[in-house]
Image 1 (cartoon, rainbow, N blue to C red):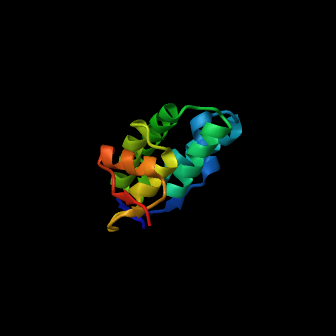
Image 2 (image 1 turned 90 degrees about the vertical axis):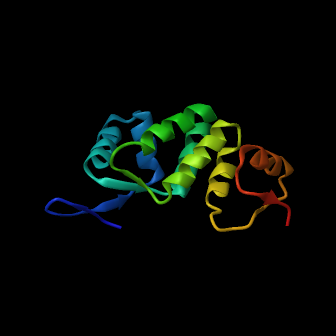
Image 3 (image 1 turned 60 degrees about the vertical axis):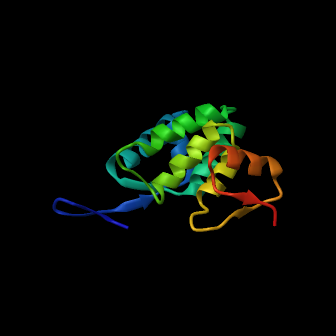
Length: 140
């Protein structure tokens, strides 16, 4: 996917978890500057798997709360040059996570477009999904 700009085609760059984390945490000045320049000067795409891994790093390494993480990710994906494969699904996942659903479960459910149900043995997830209007979760 490339975006057209006046005078030509702009490159689309896929970014890794460590770039997102360096940008959000700004705890390494050199890497923060490099990540910032890349994010500000290029169209950058972030995948659902990178968002998932970023949440894990921010929660397990940096000890951030799920709400703080989702708010930071929400702000990140609103940046003008950040591209998501499925913005609507990602924003749904953020909303479900803010409502208390496990972030990984929210990302998994957000990616189920076109499926009749998400199969899981997790009864709590099924109840939560139903309550939040997420896709149907049922046992196999």
